[in-house]
Image (cartoon, rainbow, N blue to C red; front, side, top):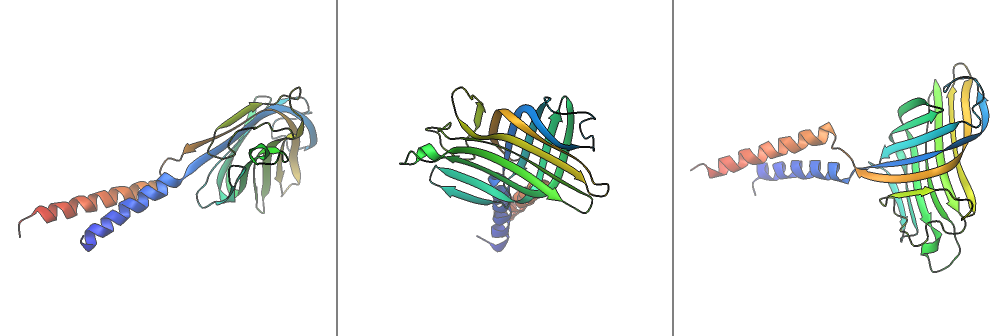
Length: 231
């Protein structure tokens, strides 16, 4: 293989690898706001937010993330990356798209030989600048093996309706806080989760990856044509 052919192949391979490995992780919780710590920013309108329905969706990709994995009992992902948080309260939606810290994990205590251990699903994001700060997280934890027999991998879709009549929960809570640093005004609330879901899809290749893929393909085509030309 010539040097030019090798370079073309390397461009195609690097573009394919960078696009194929990235996945989009999404968690969504729905429920009712149980308490409000502060609401003088009116992100979701004035008045008492307690008792109003909310939905929280956190989305990020795993590019450059650190992954922790233990058998099929625990899977964790965390790092610093672009994420989006979509929060809806009583029909009012706010979308935040920032670069900040994210974390997502699942744990299946019932998958081990021992009966001890709880089942968990958790995700959170946060960022802080001189002008603003925001955090959002949600999670459920069942002390009697809500995920019994399931693989704890983040790549396995998961959806559940919280059933206090069937399971005991150590946690089923969401929390959101947005603060305008310059004015000191903020909106902070806690929600009681009634539905929770996790999903993973393949990421759409970034423009840079697509450009590399196209450049590599053209280079390989040119090298093949030159190889076919008579000496």
